[in-house]
Each structure stands twice: as structure tokens, then as C-alpha cells.
Length: 206
Image (tube, rainbow, N blue to C red; front, top):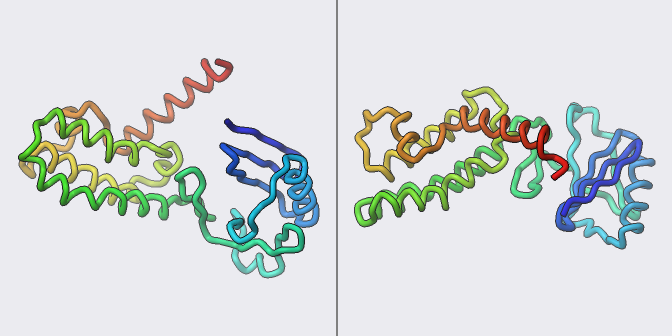
């Protein structure tokens, strides 16, 4: 369940009791509205686990910036993890792509050892259980940067498909994706964007 509160200086999105705040550069009003919202919703924030990032501002401009909750300072961070997505202050999604890469790289050795012991249907099922969810989750956001940024992750995806399908290295990657009826990262990003637009246009009230 998602709840949203908005005012002139503060926008709060709360998903399953995990709050995420968007505020303006008016610190006093932001702190007041944030404290007011927490009291109204009977919430108490753990300051040690609370952090904030500033988007679109140079680090040199943040020297005098300070956010507090009940007179306790909140830590300024370069990136934070929210609902499984790592959001960095530059919104280039490099950290999230590295996070996904490290999640998937450990499966290459495992799949290499078991690919001859399991049939193709089971291997396909394992791909959609352990690999595909990490690739498709949040791709609408992290897939936006230039293709060169996705190259490292896409090469890993291609390698995993080669291993699981036990295909020669010269096999064209398109054949690998056709075999599993899925898409490379860049077309997958476009496809997910189209699905999002269709859902928002035709089914947002259902």
C-alpha cells in the first residue's frame, strides 16, 4: 500500500511503512513539515537509519546545508537504497547497475557446473527465477542512461545465456534471447516503458 502527502516544500511517499521524502531547499519549512507529518501519522523516525541526498546541486553548495529531526542531524549520503533500487545523487544509476552485476556474477560458476546435469526446461526456469527478476526490476529507471553504461551488465546477461543454453561462443546473442523468449537489456527497457505507458493510460483507475 502506498500513501502520499504533498505540500509546497515536502512530498512524502510511504510504501509498506517505508517513507521516502522529496523536499525543497527551504530547510526550516522542510524540517517543520516533516516533523508534523510524522506526528500526524504516529511515526517516529530512527535518525541513525535516516539519511538524505541532494539532487542537482554541487557538493560545494552544500557546506551550509543541514537537516534535522527533533534537533538531531540527518546524514548526507551520495546514494541510498529504496525498495531495492539504489538511487544516487547524479541519477546515473551506476551504483545500482554495479549492485545488480555483483548479484548475478555469482551465478555464472553455479550454472556452468549444473548445465549438463539438468534439462533445458529446468535451466530456463532457473533463469527466470534467479536472473531475469534482477534485470527487469527497475529497468525503466536504470535503463535510461546511454547504452555504453548498460554494456557491462548486458555482456554478463549474454554470458549467462550462453552458459545455460550450452551454446558455442559464436552463437548470435539474438538466438539466445529468442530461445528463452525474452529481450536484451536495451529493448527490454523500451518494452517495459511501453507497458508502463499503456498501464498508466488505460488501467490507472482499475
